[in-house]
Length: 468
Image 1 (tube, rainbow, N blue to C red):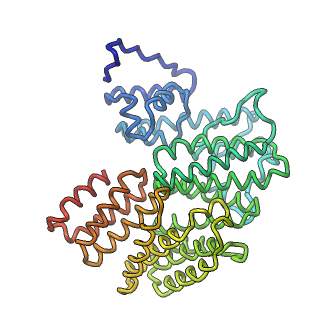
Image 2: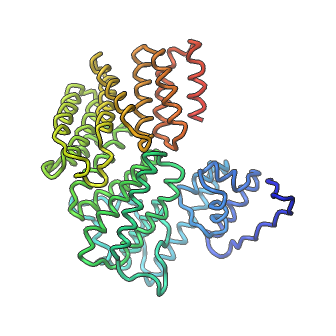
Image 3: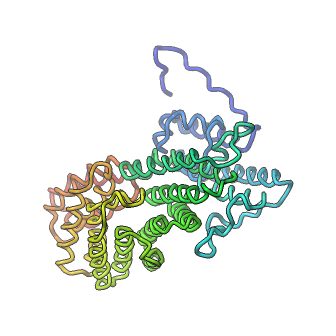
């Protein structure tokens, strides 16, 4: 138990009223489990990357929790699934309340975001919210709630706006920019995940309002961009189901806004996620869907999708086709104009990013039976990406450096690999990125054949620390 400062007596924690709601009851159970484990709110917060105040507010039902966060608390407290099972009561109560609010209409949930997102290309399956029935609107809101969305983000009562304003859309746009920058610099876990819940709640609340026709395209564009940013961050946390749902939502919003650039971004991220998950054929399909009507895309957008194709083809051991896709990407990006002419979500795709993307694809070619030329070209491009990435793209730099070290280990150059790996681990250690940690695990596997070498002892210890 933490000792209060200044010798003052610690105040007795306020009693929690578990009869107020299922959420209040769950919050009290969370506090009980924390006490049983002998943890302060600060100690528990550190385990789940939240502040002590945030934990205490969840316990007091003053801050919303989500199913994903409830699962994190369960693991951190070694509750054996108890907190996760109890969370179902919270969800049932809120579904029941939503149904009651619609004059007793039955609300049938059929499995999550995938159900309502499946549908024709070119339009959102459930039409724009202002044209929905009350039952359909509640259904969509509950599904979005499964992604960690809070119940309310805009004021209730007389202060609640009646329709979307340009300023509201600008706020969503600013949130997308900020969260994207945090994700690139610090990784998708921790602060990014915590902030994401509130921002998605704001976007959801805006979709419930009437929207002037003049703002409708901007609304879908910026909500779609936010969904893609949050989907990419969820991918970095390796929360794949959440990532896939958000990225698909981003694609659907882009299509509703008739924004081909944003659509390409959503399909690029979704393709890379599927390839990472070991489903390269699905990733290849998504990348090629993104290239439909490539004439509507900028050279950088086309090159980005061809690099995703190359990675998928390499994973499928079609190395000749993968090399061709990389060559095509190089030819296309050579036609690119200034970054200032790109959409905001493409400003990351500079020369260093292109080197990194093609270097990762060549890494996959080299690991899938490529020749020595593939190895050297992959190393050259990845090193160029490491040198070119600014601190704002710390995760990209760390991922490329880890790949260089893994490539050197895999091709029998452990001495060179150690020096590169040491710098890469410095970067990874400052990130909240499970994807980067997974690449470090692959590096450890590549280093295993050299485990008896004394010079690798320190590296193995550092790898163990990072993975822990």
